[in-house]
Each structure stands twice: as C-alpha cells, then as structure tokens.
Length: 235
Image 1 (spheres, helix red, strand yellow):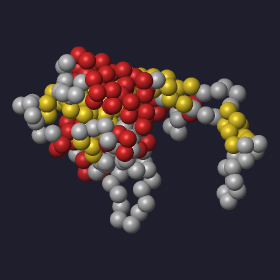
Image 2 (cartoon, helix red, strand yellow):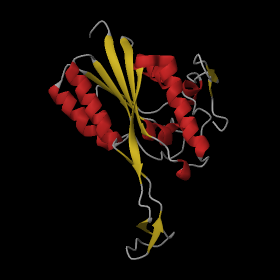
Image 3 (cartoon, one colour):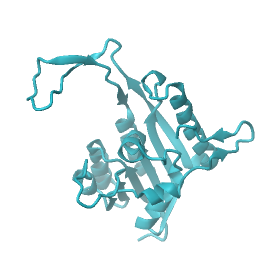
Image 4 (tube, rainbow, N blue to C red):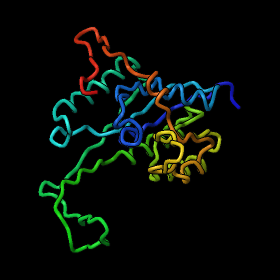
C-alpha cells in the first residue's frame, strides 16, 4: 500500500439527504469533516484532498419551507466554500417537472395495480447528478491525481463508473459509503446496501451513525469577512 492514499470523495447530495439526513437534527452537516473521519477509519493512510458534492438547486414552490429552503441550501453550500475553499467543490444539476402535471397510477391499499386508474400529480425529478458523478470520477481517475476514490451513494446507477474505473485504472483504490441509518435490532431495513456497488469496490461501509453526524456539524455562525452565514432556523 502507498504511504499516503490521496483521496477524493463524491457525494450524491440527494441520496445523502433522503437516505440519512432527512428527519434528523443534523442537516447542518460539515460533509468535508464527516467524510474525512469516515474514510480515515477505513483507510488510515488516507489524505482527503477533495470532496465533490452533487445536487440540484431546490425550487421554493415545491419546498416545505418555501423560500427559506432555498436560502438554507445556499447557506449550506457557501458555508462549505468559506470553510474549506477548494477542498469542497459543488456541481449542480437541475430539477424538471411537467407544468400541467404527470399522470401516474393511483395506489389503492389492498388492490392490484391498475394502469387505467390514474391521477395527475406533480412529479419533480432531479436531472444530471448521476452523469455528473460518473464523469467527475472517471476524469479524476484518468488525471492521476488520486490513489483512492470514494463515493457516497446507494444508487445502482453508480455501478457502471465503478466497474469502468476498476477495469481501466486497477491501481486506484475504490470505496463506497452508503447513506443509511444503522440497522435497529429486530427492525426490517427500508433499503439494503446495493450489492452491485460493494462488489465493485475495495471496501464498503453500510451505514453512518448519529454520533458521527453530531460531531461533524458546521458552526452555528460562519464568519465570512462580511455578513456571516447562520445555521437556518428550521434546521
């Protein structure tokens, strides 16, 4: 093994939020500190030099807190840029929706699927994130800058780029961290770790603990030299 594993981490922001952060008091998470800690546990020789964060700008009209949600996201991203500089880089995709609504099959408890029974709904879709992650990982692998690449996702769409890097750059160490809660004794997991991801990695971590999130929070107030960035009140 190399003396130092120069490492880059790729965070699927949507997957990370809905898989692990939503419904917790840990939304003001410092993702650079968190993944520096998690990766070091798996690879003590690692040196985290870059965290790439992938998401899409929230739309106020579809957010629970309206404009406050978009302001919160902006504060989260700017806070990371202020604290971590070039170690944190964001890549933002887009959200799309049909302005007249999308017809989807109605769910009726106890009844079989009926294609003809449909209702019109707002269907919001995040676009470009999967492709952006794959392109960034492959280009970073080809650059020769990193000896270890780690992705935080539980989306099977990441499998092809892991497989391609493993085949084309066998000297690069690959890791997977799935944004899931630890299993509770006797409880049925909502969604298991994707075996197709771990099968194409050198190591995989199946969950993130509350304690790890709690100790890796951003400061409630981040000084910028101008107007400070405050933790959103509803977070």
